[in-house]
Length: 63
Image (tube, rainbow, N blue to C red; front, side):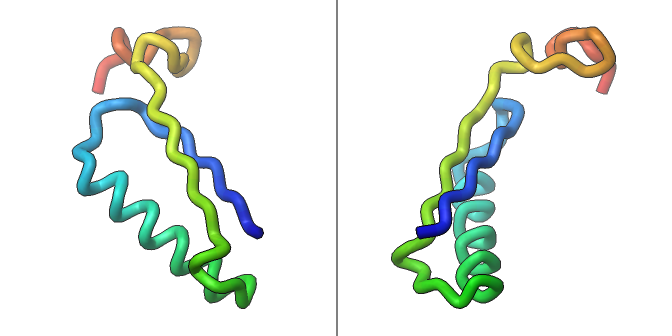
């Protein structure tokens, strides 16, 4: 059973997270010839204050 872990910065709309899950499931299923029902996708949203970019929390970094 393929398990895919995805970590994202928080703040994306739920529809986009759902879309990622659907596309990743499709890609893994096709690539590994695995039934979609066996593919697991885990999405973890990380608070911007807990994600560092160049030594600065993403919450304080310039966009």
